[in-house]
Image (cartoon, rainbow, N blue to C red; front, side):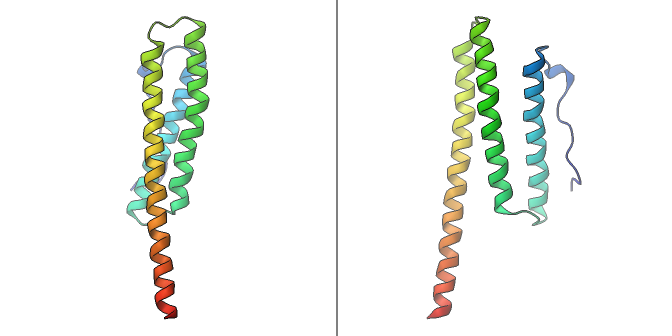
Length: 122
């Protein structure tokens, strides 16, 4: 089991654009947190709120980063802006899918708890 988070960033990922590299490192930090969370889940040392927090952390960070990156692509007339923006959209759709799955799971768990409580009172 991992006992702490670790650095996933490698120098070869650098684009030599300071703000983008810094933000990409931030994504890698969140990825490291999610790996750590996964390892904690194996030990049953995780709360559903931990999953919610990491998903929303990814989501908020993605919106900030995508705005920054796409603004720079517009400013500097990046030729593949539409293709790259599509990758951003796919990432956000995947996050939305994970969030929806989590909501379904929580709803099922809540229904199971309610059913259990009702069965005790009968």
